[in-house]
Structures are given as structure tokens and as C-alpha cells.
Image (cartoon, rainbow, N blue to C red):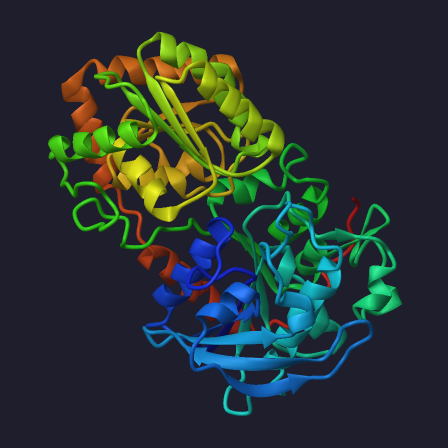
Length: 486
């Protein structure tokens, strides 16, 4: 039987707070699943959540646990009738900054307590002790901030099946050994087959060990993380789960607002083949970023400015792009070294490179619409959304053949791929883009194919629904994955 009630546990939810792709996925996937099951979301009560929450009703309370303070659980209804639970604990969540860090980008010193409290509260809800009117049949958790939910359920000998989706294995939630007692975990869990990872407590590993089933956000990445190159030290455990058919890759989608014909944020809407409308957006973005008028190609970079995203490769290729007659616009935030290097490069090529440190959703959409090519040279990319956003707006992505990029970019048809994450490989792909830009018939054909590529959530929702059904039919309880070596 397909589970009729699913609890979706996430540290980000697009309606209230979004740091990256997880927020967008958490806002869209439950909505796509809503027609298939009674799915409800639970999020921490950050200041940004409380500022936007209306009609919040307290439905239960969680007692203190070890070093975790007590909290309340609120429930609200979004405008499209999605039920969202909110973990209310002002001392942990009512702060300025992001869900994970303060305004200076420093991780909150008590992130172990903050997200353990969140996970323990979600586990209470899953066990039916919070909302007497609703108990889930299955719990779906996401990334390290909610990965302790399967662990808490296992430690409590609860039989609720769980799924952990890995959005990015590189972020693991690592804390010192003393965290174990602070979060109310049994001391016996601190071993190689539990939460221990190189003498630290790993929240993500807890989920990898105790969840009934694991998923990640593309089939390619599901295979990559079982290898030493991409496994972040956890490849042995992931290979074991994969061998037991307990690891599945399901490609993310993007929501229907990414439509160049209707998006209200664009300087001009346009349809497939209406390249005049696309040029209006390009003129607007060039003006906004202070770039010179140009008939050459416009390259975009909309990303977290971190090593994973290949920002150093963009910096290395910048002069070659400008010398060939191209221009670049960049927006995003991330590591200070990359923010500063991009700003210096922009000052050096002020007519051709525009950089805005920060992120504004409306401006980002205009860059996707304005650009001819989108730069996505990620060293690894579990799924990636920017290449799909770009394609929907007729911008051809130039990406490294990895993870979700390899699955969503058809080389020479809906974008360009390069095999080695090196500057040389990247520049070869950029030269191919310049060549295509000079061949308008080929360029427009690729644009049309990119814009027509299916990228919605329906297929992903059906895959998750089938997975939920399979897990429920097997009546598998959360348990240890078995022994492995780090």
C-alpha cells in the first residue's frame, strides 16, 4: 500500500527561507507529491519563518532532552493548502542570519543543538505524540540538518520507515565527540557502524546508517558517491547500501514558474523563437551591470561562489572570453576569496564583466533570460538547478560532465559538456559556444531544444511515490546498515 501520510523534514522551505537548491526542492517536491499522498512539511522556526507565518497554531510540546531545550510545535496552512509544522524555540532559531550561520558567514556555535532539537521534534511528531490528529506512515528527511531523525527513531525502537535524501554529500554536519551526550544519543552509537566519523559525530552519517532507504538527486551522483573520488570518506558505507538496493537516484525538477512566456520578473517575456524578447532582457542586464553595448555573446554565472562550483575556472577563463568578444555577468555569494577575485576581475574589465555580490531572485531570473550561455563548471554537482533554469530561458549551459549536469545537458543539443574539470577542458567548451553563437541557425535550434526539454516535477514525484510504496510494502523498519570501513 502506498503510504497515505508522509512527513517531509527539511531545514529550508522556499516559502519562508532558502539558502540554496534544497530550499527550492523542498518548496516544490512536496507540492508535486500532494496529489498522491497526505504530505506535510516540518521546518525550524527561524526568524524569517515567523515573520511570514500567519495563522500559526500551537499543537504540541516537546520536553527537554539531554542538552536540548524544550520546544513547541506550531502548525500553519500555506495559501495553496500545504500543512507546515514549525519547531518553535526562540533561543535556538530566532536569530539574524541564515539557517546555518550568522551575518558574517560563521557557523552558529550551537548548530549541533539547533538541528538535533529539530530532528528530535520531528521524531516526536513521527511517533504520534505531538499532533494527535495526524501520524505519518513514512518520514522523508533531507541532508545533515535533519539526518538525525532516523537515528532518534531507531534509538527509540520506533517502526516508522524513513528515507534520507542526500542533496550534497560534502556537507556532513560534523561535531566533536561531546556532542553525543548533548543531543541525547546513546554512547553505544559512537562507533564505526554508528555516528562516529574520524573521532567526530557525523549527523549525515547517522542518517546514512539508520535510514530505511537513501536517495540522492540524480542517478549519476548516486553512482559517483560510491567511489573514493566523490564519496567524501563515506563511499564504503554507500557502496554497502547500494549493494543492498537501498540507494536510489531520482533527478530533481524545477517548478512551473520558470517559463519565459509568463515570468513576471523579466524585462520582456518571450517564447521559443522570439529572440527579440531575449535581446530586450540582454540589453536590460547589460545596462544594469554597467556593461558596454555589445553584439557578442553574454555569459552568466548564477551560483554559490565556492570551489565546488568551479569559480576558479570561470576566473581563469574570463580574459579569454573577453578577448573573444564575450561579456560575463555574475551574481552570488560565497567564499570571500572568490567574491574579491571576481570584483577585481570586474574592475579590470569594467566594460565586459559585471559582478554583484549578493542574491536577488528577480535579478537572477533576468540573467538567465538575458544570457546566451550559462557557466556551470562544477567539480561535482549532485543535480544542479541553474542549468535547467537556463535551458528553460533559452540560455545554453556549459557544464562539466558530472552528476545531474551529465543527465540534463545533451552535449551539442541543449548545451555543452566537457569531461575534465580543468581550465583547458572548460575553455575548449567555451570556444565551441562561441562557434555556435556565430552559426545562428545552429544556435537557435539548440535554444529551442533546450527550452523544450521536460524539467518539471511530475516524473520525480511519481518516482518518489513508487519508492514510498515499495518501502511500505516491504514493511522495513529503520535499522543499522551493517558493518563497513571508513
